[in-house]
Image 1 (cartoon, helix red, strand yellow):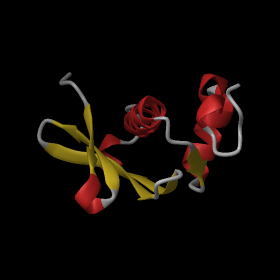
Image 2 (tube, helix red, strand yellow; image 1 turned 90 degrees about the vertical axis):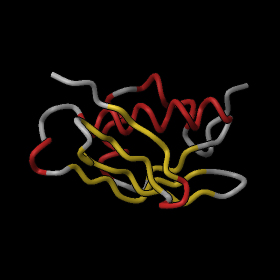
Image 3 (tube, rainbow, N blue to C red; image 1 turned 180 degrees about the vertical axis):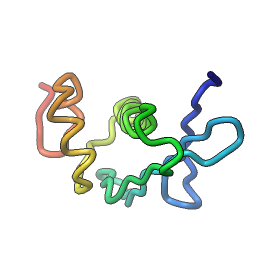
Amino acid sequence: MSELTVVDVPESKRFEAHQDGALAGFADYIRTAELITFTHTEVDPAFEGKGVGSALVRASLDAARAEGLPVLPVCPFYQGWIARHREYADVLYGTTAD
């Protein structure tokens, strides 16, 4: 199985997951100077059940964390994923890391 890659595409305001040159899924966002809001996640039906959604969330949250940018997860998929992966709770908007 080939490697799944996730990249930020700022001009499209989304993170994209690609596998074998195909767009496997994406996560739309709204970014401001204060935070990044994830609004919608979509996985192509051909790639469902293969970890694409999780890879999108993990990569985008890791990028937000690296930039020190709090995350507001409006998307239900993001909300559920973060609830199951509490190690990412620190990146949520309104939480304190101090």
